[in-house]
Image (cartoon, rainbow, N blue to C red; front, side):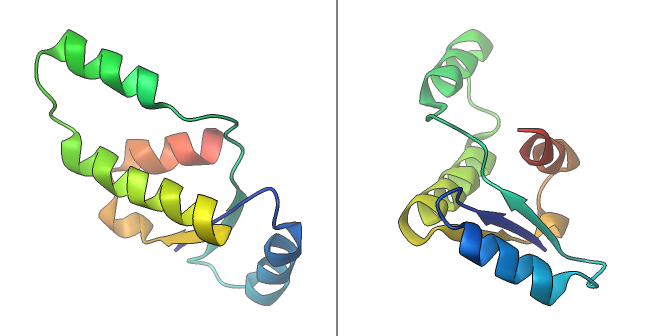
Length: 91
């Protein structure tokens, strides 16, 4: 499981790290994004001619909304493509 915590919720981030530090299948990260990525998504659709990753983006938008509204989100990384998980960890 991947926990994505808003930068405004450092209290929750620290609490999760303290509670789950020894869980091998859990990772807690801060949401480091500063702005929406919608413009980049539009360009990718226009260049490719069709949207092959629509379901993946829809899932990411749900996670983004959950982080904005609740301050955190949980993602089951076993169901996401590896490149998506890697990009979340790097961003």
